[in-house]
Length: 210
Image 1 (cartoon, rainbow, N blue to C red):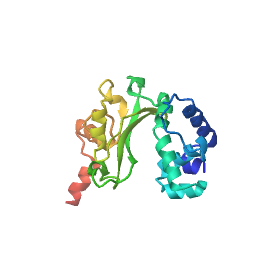
Image 2: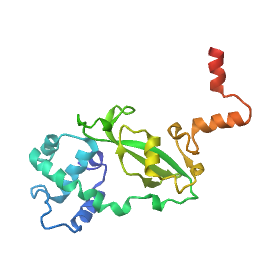
Image 3: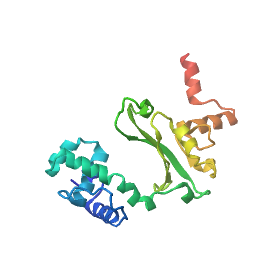
Image 4: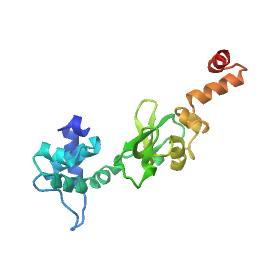
């Protein structure tokens, strides 16, 4: 139960365990189950987060009960973001003169009947929308705070305010970001056609078909 189940190799899990174990925690903070230990508790939590497997199934894989896995997940989950917070890129780390590629992704979560705002019509499931920017070389540059999954990428981008201190003409995105002065495949092509007095191939085809 390493990379394919957790998304981390063994060395990365060990590094994460070291970071969690070195964190300052209150005397009343819950501890991970002794029968699992820190390493297996982290593995169980990462597996649960990555695949949304049932806790009973994970417990069976590790030879423990479902309540033990539940205790491990509830203890480790809030410790993971705190232990790696220094590695999460923020908007302050962005270079105003650099070129970035922007896209949104849905982080799936449980489908609560009372939280319809989490449902994404595009993905046909519930979750939280986060915006992710990378360099043109594929290096992660920025991650937004999560927004309800029912919201479109453009709304989430505006909520983040990431373009307020940036030159949007240096940013590349899909057609969901049209209207922000970003480089978008559909919008910019239409604008180029209009500026040269040419009609788009799509427009010609539509007229011919009619």
